[in-house]
Image 1 (cartoon, helix red, strand yellow):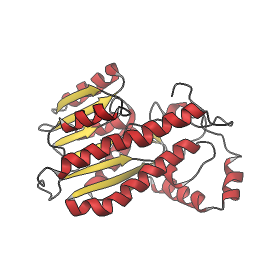
Image 2: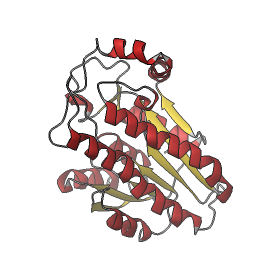
Image 3: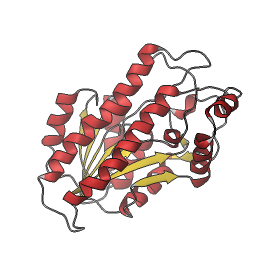
Image 4: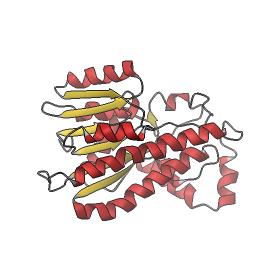
Length: 262
């Protein structure tokens, strides 16, 4: 495992990238605190991590519950790495994005991240530095969508941009206290969430590869961990286009479907 962190906390660990991250961090001597909303899937992920020799402490939890999140994180003990991974994705389906969907995306992808990261930073600030000289690391899972305002997924792009900018800005000051923040910006990852997409997803990668790149970037101390580079470069290019030109381009592309379950 890149970094070999002994005490790790991951939200959204029951499937997709979160589960892949948990399995990549699982090794003898490691203690993993894992959360998810689906008890059965979370236990499957926990069992897979236990098989790798790690001690697993799973909890069914909604990241939107600020009090429950704060209590869970405060009671976890020492934390070397916290990954705010829980998130949802949905778009307009070519129409107007539903108001409830918009609010739910912001609740989970922004407020849920803050409900994870802020208590974690508080815990880390009070603990002694580790062998690497740091009190801890907090990684926020954003997306390359943070760099382009795609009309087909306005709430998703905006939410991911918010947490990416917040983590990168905060890293500049928190590192003075020995705490690092990392904005993880993956491209398309093969997960149950992206399986619903009806459009072509260039450079689609397996969750295991995305987890490897994520942990490797964190271990190397990168504030922004963006991959794969062609998708990241494409998003930066589209994001730099004039607004009208970008709208013209995206209006000729399939939109991400709305999700009535959010």
